[in-house]
Image (tube, rainbow, N blue to C red; front, side, top):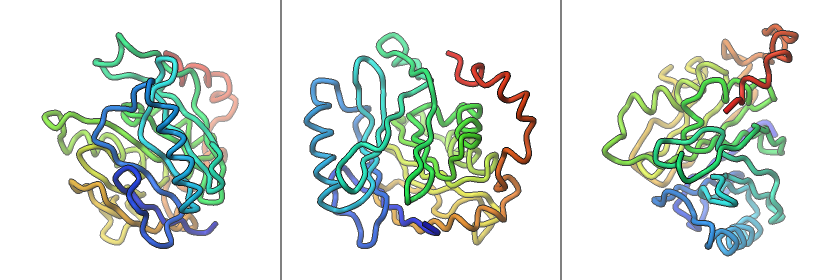
Length: 235
């Protein structure tokens, strides 16, 4: 698909017309494990009803924090766990062991779970694996939120890797893109705003005009990367 229309909405809110990819923006830290099965079943029905790809809220399974991607047929396209944890989770949750990119008709999607957005090696690995669209879902305590957290997170990921980054949390929603392809050259297609509602068109052919938008396999030392790949996801 040459373009994708992304809609961020509150959980189970009606998506805007023509949406291809819906992302839930939730006020909760995550869905607890006792509620995960029922919650994901409701998400499956939502994706099927509205015929969209869906990234629901973060949820817990076997002490791992996850995001997943549903397809329009209600099936799970992919699941990604958090490879890093914030301080409040380290004593309760386990780290996931790998990063995966999920090819779909609405883009090659990487699901960035919570604080993974602050680890550049995770985003670079996602780009090496072919991601052109990152969906970052976080929970941020309001007293911790600062512009620096946004720029070192979704904005930096977009500029460093030549990709689109859709970011949502309980505090803001935004879409970052390489600065060369944003109309005002700020690096934002939709600047951060305190809202759970967002609607944006992404044109993947424009990524070719970004400095880092060319396929990274042509830019990097592949033998070196393959030799050190395991270290990129080391706990």
